[in-house]
Length: 436
Image 1: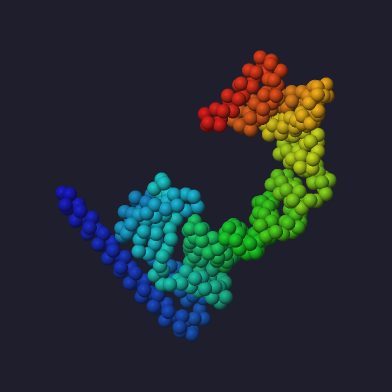
Image 2: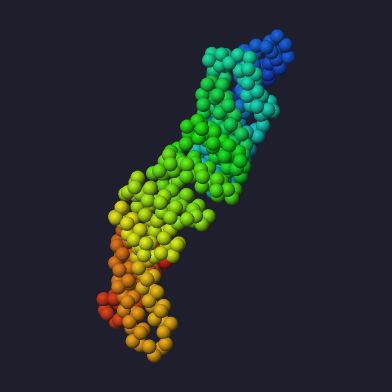
């Protein structure tokens, strides 16, 4: 019985290969017929001739890959296609592991769950067939746009889907610029159906940026924005990032300022703009004014107060920085970063008194004790804030390390309570360092 099953399986494979051969022979005859048709001057003037040409060329472009299905189990797919892989190799792309199933005319990329994610066509049955299909449709459109509401609709829609599929395949293969080109063609194809495809235009911009073609990226992102695909300021933010990559900070700032007027509650816009203001050494009051406007529109947004605190810290004003960090905790009581940063500001004030004390003459005991005494309230305040931060986020090792250091200072008075606190945070810090 086992031998019979093997014979039947082999026969089925031979039958499938034979059917594929016949299908390709039939396709080739249709291609040759199409070549003859477009060579006829009278027939070449008909939109239908070019729609038919586009259809057969599109079929030729997928002659080897038409049975491949994304998000489909590879085991089931292998039972559907008429050939066995030449080899299976393990590779990594963009940090993700894949198994590559190698065939003569294409490679299939499969994820760790055994699902087909994308593929790479290595040959077209007729070279340049996909591009030829696109050109044929453009000729049909030039002759009679009306044909796309009837006979040409399905062909055009299928070509659009193929450009999108091939574009995503190339994107996954890290061939980003080529992917961008296909996304552009997908949008142009969809335009023949009177559809404005902002998503494909946006994808083109993303792909060109990741390929390092910044001018093209900006061109298509700007087009996406013009037709309404602005993602509530997200496209402006992305364009500003690209301008920064090009060293065009002034242009990035102008873009973000205009976007902020339209989308004043977009935190990403505010964050980028403030970072650029700081980098380009703009007037601090300009930054504060921007933050005040954003806070007025979104008063419970603790992130805005954190930004202000960071700004004042960079400008050397620890009192205003501490106040802003505390405001962040008022806006968002679970904001451990606000408590942590405010505590660090207080601890630094205490450190400044200790540093002054250490610079005194060794015999100036009275002056030393007076300065240390001034440091104590700041350290106490820092501990209170940092322990609140630790309660909210007990996994943040930086908070534990700072508390350990502060209690080290405090335990020098030989208080059993302070010594116990220091031991607690010191042990906890060591365990966190060891990943426990």
